[in-house]
Length: 239
Image (cartoon, rainbow, N blue to C red):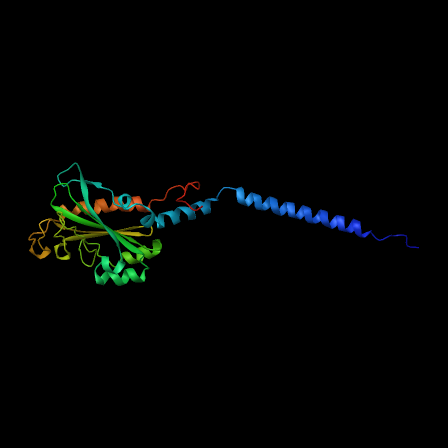
């Protein structure tokens, strides 16, 4: 005779309730751990890359283009180039020559920031341009559209500020140009003389007087493209 008795429904319900409670507790514990843990190394790396790629938009213009930038003087020692003015954000096609604009468009150019500087002797003008691209690969591809031998064309179009020493800094005045790339940025320069003489009338070329343009552009590029350790408690970070 089989004497086994079925479990009462109340017992079964109690056991099921206990199992569900344990499962819920485990799930809640896992969720709490996920919410309270610190960011992983990968997440910090992603946050740092994101912050770098947005600096051209989130940084104040005076931080992108400091009031003065140091460079090595032609005769030795250190000098400082002074900022004349900062131009509003420009569309990619309007900030460079048409022969380079197509390459920027294909690379997904997001915008161009420009500022004009004058050397310590107040004889040479340089417009520095920050070209923001989606990522490092896009920036590297876009770089090939610009000459690396110092030629100014195709290149960055200068910015003149009326009522200043730069008011005659037009595209025809350009005598030298540079291109540098790091991270999602290109930094371009175009340089010419304050007196406004066209490049074709400059006579003997003196590339040394324009050499500081590359140096100040590298400073701007380094500040923009160097990652920083994320501070997840600060508003500018998204960890």
